[in-house]
Image (cartoon, rainbow, N blue to C red; front, side, top):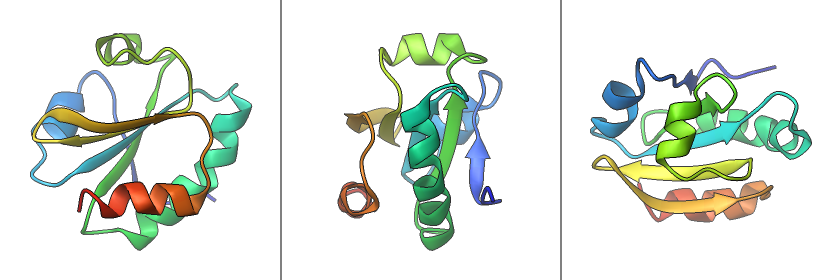
Length: 109
């Protein structure tokens, strides 16, 4: 079951919720038809629950929000990017397990 702590980012709220966020934000660029994206989804849900209040975690559906994906050079999905101060500070492409994502998050909290 999807976590209520995972935000949905769109072209209408990306600037306010990601770029202007006081906290670091992990953005999962994904699509419903992408098998690796569906594999990482439950991990994203777990992390959103475990890191509530320490980092914001959300998703961008690349099919519905193409301009955001293009702006940040998302060529393959899943792409996971951490934003701080309106800038991408780290990005990984492809499926990664929870341990790898925890290491990434801990560097930016």
